[in-house]
Length: 122
Image (tube, rainbow, N blue to C red; front, top):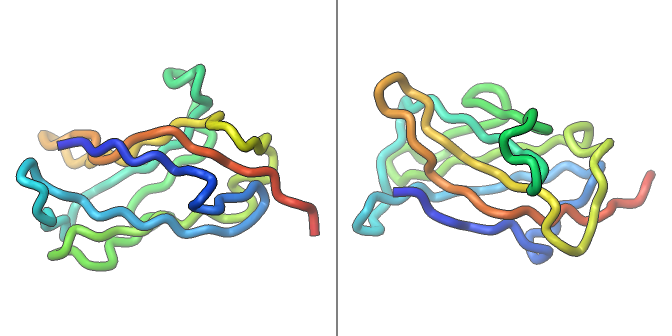
């Protein structure tokens, strides 16, 4: 069952900065869903153009790590270079989806708006 989980300013995601996002995947009863061996994809798009090209794409082994398969926990690593060219704001400007992509089991697991705050150059 998909879970809406907005990435807010409290998550402190800044343009041009590394950040790791954690997700706990649950079943329809709200219990942790075992995700060991799943293929997954994280995409970030502009909030007003969700059907447009992804600005960031991560997959298992390439940005997504299943850290506790039995407990349904995975992490998505956002590198500083992933967000270098993106405009930050204190309002949601982006949309993400975390999906299972195994053939025959495709499903959105988590989704929501994203506040990407403007980072300072270093």
